[in-house]
Amino acid sequence: MQPLLNAIATTALPTDAKRVFHGRGGLYPGCEHLTLDFFPPVWVLTSFKPLAEDELAAVGDALAARWDQLAPSQPLDWVFQCRREGQSDTRLMSGEVPDPHWVTEGATRYRVNVGRGQNHGLFLDMAEGRHWVREYVAARSGAQSRVRVLNLFAYTCAFSVVALQAGARHVVNLDMSKAALAIGQQNHRANNVLEHASFLPHDLFSSWGKITRSGPYQLVIVDPPSYQKGSFVATKDYARLIKRLPDLLAPDGHLMLCLNAPEMGPAFLLDHMANLAPELIFVERLSNPADFADVCDQRSLKVLVYRAPPLDR
Image (cartoon, rainbow, N blue to C red):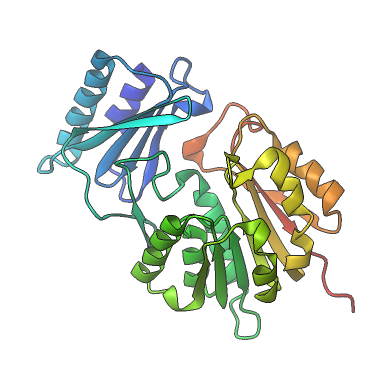
């Protein structure tokens, strides 16, 4: 646990939501079960195996000592979440969690919930993906070329918010979870971009007609769960999805394809794309944020970009 305590002792005070310690990346032997995030003003310690009370006390003492240096007039707020066997238990260790709880990433505000559940409303490891979307849309935001975006498995719609901030014409957000999309609508409203977004609380594989009628799209974003029973299981459903993607893209449109499953390397997506959507051209794999460094890029988050062929002249 010492590497975690060292990270706490040396961290600066982040203004944005941030991963502070990423033991899951394997760079700190013995700490592979630990992560520490800061969703201002709340620290979130996550362990993928139970921690003894003396270990939690050591983390609490380290946070208190550093917080007294960084923000001496502010109370310390931190929570601990233990995850195992698909279940999670969250404990408030000190202070309180704001309700509602809003954080920033650059100029964008997002509502988060760190008090319960494994997903907090904003995936910090996808920061580079959001940056890429913002840059892609901004480069095509002229009056004649504004981008239409399809955001599949939209969750709380972070991609949609940054796309609209960058000048997208319209974004269609689809997710089975009405609750997640409701938070997504709040995110749009908080960033003054609600007008040009739509929200479809539907099952993807039952909604092709609605999706197709709103297309074609200059950008399609696919960021599904790797395993969510009743919604999407990557090993069997990604192939079904990939076969349909070329029909959704406008000529020269781009596709962002994501997979966060350590047991499946980039070849899983690359091979499926080569076999099932060979007309789409591989462009690049996006780098992950430095805060999520991993000893093996086969295990870390995969974000691949593809391009549709241009219109024949």
